[in-house]
Image (cartoon, rainbow, N blue to C red; front, side, top):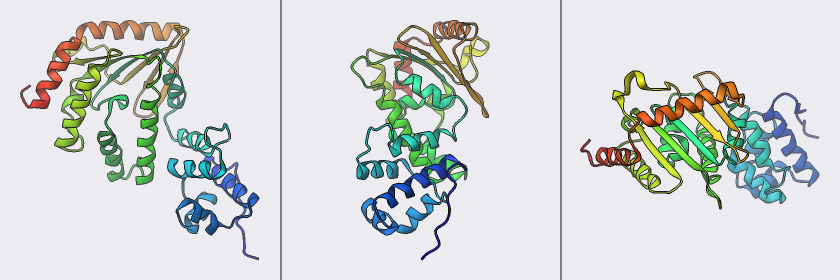
Length: 279
């Protein structure tokens, strides 16, 4: 009888995912190669995931769910993958994403990069694979990051979509990401989104100087009960806040910032001129 490595699902979320995959496989009487054939991968790949030596991708989790008829179930492998993936994110961000998907109003401020909710697939991949080139994440993790972003964007497409207010630091428009074609398509995406009735996009120009209300990315959500959720992050940490003493001053500062930024119409002109090469 072949030696079977003992698994410890308590060791990590990745280990728990692998242990559950093995349990599911063995309950059905499949060997690793059989499961691999059904999922379109190798037995070695299955072994690596089961033993926690390799992290599963979102695509892999969805394939397992289709095979086991678990799509949409609270026990789906995709749901477990999301929990595993969120374990690597800044503290507070997974909680924020949950609120974001049901917010009635979203207010964003971003510096340097186009906000994720406005990114084209090409731009998002260029950002993610930039981290791959730096050795910060693997190619599979980059694919997963893009997939999660696509889910966040899809969550905003609903019968009653949220109002989305976006303040873009002017640096977002000039930061070259992915080359000229990628940037052209990204700027075009901004123009297109600005025409939607539930999107208000404003550019905060460089010359605001000390009138800038924020220097770091800011996320503010209004929920259906009109309560406010704020999320702020630095390079090393992030947190969700619901305390009135914290969120009200942030909301006030955001409104003040909006009044200082270019109007929606002037912002669209700015973006269009930059895209045409005549800023």
